[in-house]
Image (cartoon, rainbow, N blue to C red; front, side, top):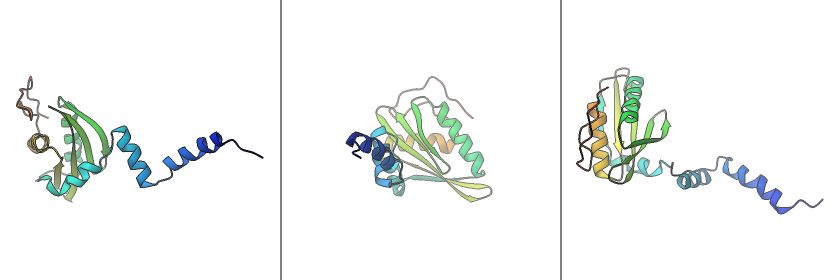
Length: 146
C-alpha cells in the first residue's frame, strides 16, 4: 500500500495547524495579521486607570466606543482584551486589557508600541468618549459620547 506524499501532507499540515502548538498558531496569527503578541509584550509600559464600574459594563461600553471610533478596526476580542488597529497616520496595533478589581471597579490598561496611538486611545477610553482630535492632530467630524 503506497500512499502518495500529497495525501500525507494534506492530512498533516491541517493537523499541525490545529494541534494546539502555540508556535504554529502564533505564526499563523502573525501571517494573518491578527497576532496580539506585540501588544501583550508592551503591557509593562501600558497606560492604566481604574474605573468605577463593574467589569461587564466597562468591557461592553469600551467595545461600543471602539466600534464607533473612526479609523479603528477591531481585530481580536477575548474576555480580558480588545485588540484594535488604529489607522492614523499609520496602522498601529493597540490593546485594551481589562481586569476586575472588585464588583464595582475595573482596571483598564492600554498598550501599544506606538506612543501617540496608545495615548490617544487611552484618552478616549478613559474619558468614555471619542475625542475630536486624532493622534495625528486631525479633527474628526464630531465627538460622539456613549
